[in-house]
Length: 197
Ligand SMILES: CC(C)(COP(=O)(O)OP(=O)(O)OC[C@H]1O[C@@H](n2cnc3c(N)ncnc32)[C@H](O)[C@@H]1OP(=O)(O)O)[C@@H](O)C(=O)NCCC(=O)NCCS
Image 1 (cartoon, rainbow, N blue to C red):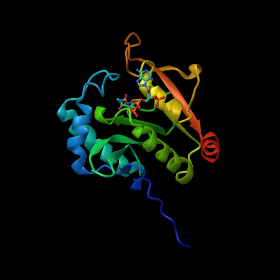
Image 2 (image 1 turned 45 degrees about the vertical axis):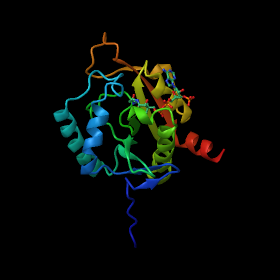
Image 3 (image 1 turned 30 degrees about the vertical axis):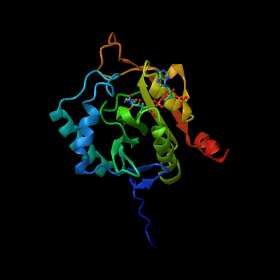
């Protein structure tokens, strides 16, 4: 019998983008992204450059262990680094998220790439990969209540919000303005229905 090996983080091309595994040469873009205050408006604080370097190595390691993870979004024509987007098994909350075990879709773009539908193009493709190739039953996404730009992306992807799923992020003071999170879910059935509709 021939065993089929699925590359869980393939290089994928969309109309305008290349979606691909993180490589060591992406560190500079990763630092630029994560030290930008606008990108971190809804996170408690930007990481230092040293923390970025550690996070980058951990992300690459996790990608190798899980077989997939947040992937680079690159402009197809210029090969410029735009940010990241992809599917990931969350690990930073040590199993304390109410939706775990789960696979999330996450994204973060350099501000010059905002407002062009880039994240929708990348996310749709990763969702298709998650449901069609990885055969996931569900993909979730979450963010702080007030991150309306990100919530709008989730809604445009057809993800479903139920206020009953709102949760306090583990390890964040309940009085902190960035503690309360909203959760969006997308089932394989709904995604396949949307794709065929
Ligand atoms: C989230 C992010 C990837 C979205 O990028 P994007 O594709 O450029 O998104 P847009 O700027 O096109 O905005 C998406 C939608 O939100 C809407 N929007 C933008 N600002 C908004 C606001 N303040 N309130 C409500 N809606 C808003 C836009 O109009 C757009 O909707 P439309 O397509 O119906 O017009 C980008 O903002 C980002 O990287 N943010 C920083 C990191 C982050 O917050 N990541 C998510 C953490 S969960």
